[in-house]
Every structure is written in C-alpha cells, then in structure tokens.
Amino acid sequence: MKKSQKTLTLLVLLIGVAIIGFTTYQLTQTNQSASRNSGKALIGGDFTLTDQNGKTVTNKDFEGKYALIYFGYTYCPDVCPTELQVMTGALEILGDDAKKIQPIFISIDPDRDTPELMKDYVSNFFPGMVGLTGTKEQVAIAAKAYRVYYSKAVEKGADADSYSMDHSSIIYLMGPKGEFLKHFAYGTDPAKLAKGVKAATKG
Ligand code: NI
Image 1 (cartoon, rainbow, N blue to C red):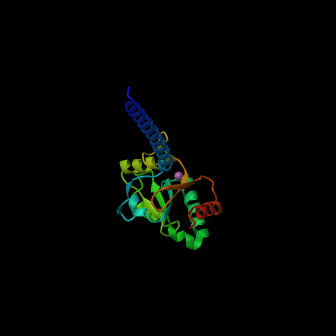
Image 2: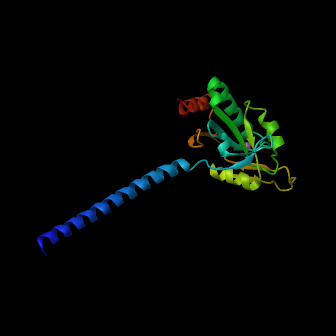
Image 3: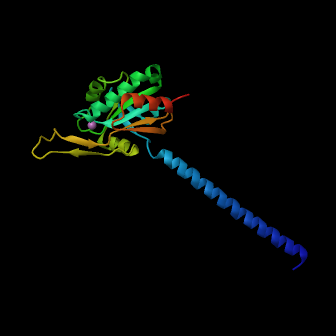
C-alpha cells in the first residue's frame, strides 16, 4: 500500500467510526425522548363525546384551559357525588384562580347517562362543570385514554336497569394542551386538592 492509500484507508475508517458513534448517540437520544414523551402520554388523549347540551365535543374543545377531570356516573350512590363535591370545594377555595380551570365529569355509564341527565346532575356542583357522555364506544375510548377502569355490577334478580358500576375514582389535572399534569387519589380533601392544583397551575 502506498502512503496515500494508507492515509485514505485510515480516513475512511475514522469517518466510519464517527458515523457509527453519531448514529448510536442519536438513537440513544431518540429513545430517551421517546420514553419521556410516552411517560407524559400515558394519561389523556383524543376523545369525542356529547356534552350536557347535546353538543358533540372533542378533547380539542377543552384546550387553552386547565381541566379537572373525573369519570363516574350519575346513579352512583356515594363515591361520585363525594368526589365531585371535593372538586367543587377545591374550586371554591381557589376563588379567582378557578376561572382558568374547567371541571369535567365524564360518564362511564352511557346506557343510562343521557345528556339531559348529565345536565341535571352537574348543576348540583361547581358552576360551569361540563358533563360528558356518549356511545358505549366513545366512552370506552375516553376511559381507555385516561386508564379508567369500569365495569357493570348487576345483582342477581335485580332489575336490568338498577345495576351499579364499579369504577376507578381519580381526579386528573390536565394542562392547557391536554397534557397530563397530576392526579389526585380518592380521599383527597378539598383543601389538599386546591393546594395541589394551585401549585401545578402557577404562572
Ligand atoms: Ni361512582
């Protein structure tokens, strides 16, 4: 090999190593940002539902504002009304800051929760609370996006219409772009919820 050939071979090798190194670095970076993104994307996502006035709405309609979201059903004997009361209490504590937060109640009982029923039900809680329901499929998509579990619990010998629903009870705080910010477990009191929301929505 001539000296110039040796130099060329060495140069090609060096470039090769550099390319492999750079590609590996990029792949690592991509993986890191992918896991970061998926970590955020675990809760929330696209949905199409019907609001309490019978209007079709999507998740996009709620962008631009923070949202407190709770999944449940109007026939719920205790857990749902308690949690929506906690949400209402927290928003009352927040006062003026509550203006930047949209409270949303999403039904996981589409068979019984009509928009009319939702309208009547949400009027018991914080003013401006939105009540969303939809077809079985629409509700399933929304619940899946928020990782909400629900299941019909029919008692033996009971009326077909007098069942209860087992469901997760979590209040989600979403950001103005629909991104997940924080969740509050069942049993959080209004003061603690208000404090958590205030901290996460500051600025
Ligand atoms: Ni409930």
